[in-house]
Length: 259
Figure 1: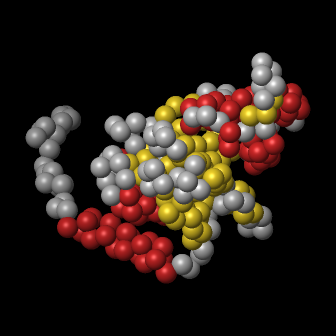
Figure 2: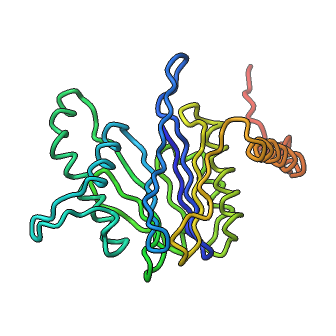
């Protein structure tokens, strides 16, 4: 299980991912799920992965080594993609290639082909973009109306994003909200856990402004968790009780005559 979130606002891009892949009493594994590809000043791209770890690693390795274009013979990678859209297509091609190679063997072992990616960034001369790529290789793009995308265990963190994220939110407020969203998910699902990898990129810089790993016990995140919990308790206490609590029913009780 995992949780990854990407937020694209006017001031830039935030991407965040946990690192837990297995959870149990004696089986906890940590792998980096947020991967960055950059040529400073020219392009910066980030991929966050969810689903079967072996599949996602195969896809990422294929993207790093490159896929041969059957028409041109060119070896296509993310680093030589001419646009973000073409780069997203290459991720889809890599997913389908891995499925063609391994899909039959996975089905024989009754293992589903489960993988998804968040892909965001910017190539110099074009706008910053954020995509979600599905296990079929197709993808969608976030918009100004819905400026965030999630993969993995997304349901616990989504209400926070729905209430607090809009396209004109400050970039580091977006980061703060993404951390609250991550904390909400971690509180409700032990399959999501620390460390947490964070990326912040501003438009037209093509370089990470923040590339940071939050370890367990990190002071700011610990304080954020405590403050968010306290704020929720205070909000609950300050909201009046429903006025219809203990209100007598307007329907007269049914009586049964005996005799």
